[in-house]
Image (cartoon, rainbow, N blue to C red; front, side):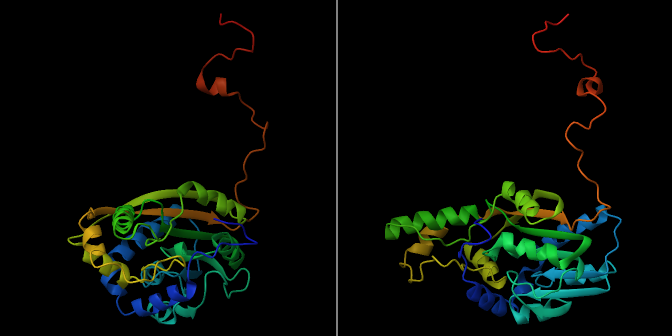
Length: 292
């Protein structure tokens, strides 16, 4: 993921913003997928007795803010890289970059990001800013596509490009791995960090249906290293002939709390007052001894 001082420059953020702006008029086409991902994420609010009053929707594309309001949260800000997308999202609109949050410390007690942070170059830095924008004991919920998402499309495009051009360029965004996320949350200063994974099946009737949905959601390739040349005529027919249309969206979920003195602390090493052998009903044998 890179380090905080020298984050990688993988994505063309201006191109991401342009495609999000254009997608504001078409994103309703993929509302079922966005809504399903958002509802799955927000269901986790049922696991806490906290009552939230000031929420930030980061890039929810119209799926998050209305659901937060329906849960009785009175103040919801919708921020997106694209002004048009921020306006259609359903909360108080703010056009802004996740890499440079324009909010004072402690502005919100809940921050939610559904399928948006995968276009951020400096994810560790963004997580630090999110934690700072949370009030003490505030909650951060986020989902983003994980490694394995669109893997079939990635492989079909790579093999077709290797045959038609003799080389491969990135055509699908790189996605993070689950094992990285809890560490990133802890590194950003979150308490009780948790990362887990869900799978959202998707079946398409045609390859162009998938491509159309990616464009409608503003999810077309925005990697700096992409090949901008017009591909050979046979490229897409060859790739699509190898594409399995039975696929899944692997959704990685991050949960973290802004630190507060009331939160449960991990036990100090050596502070246990019972032996593991007693809890398991077994006999403890010291080194060198033989079982009786």
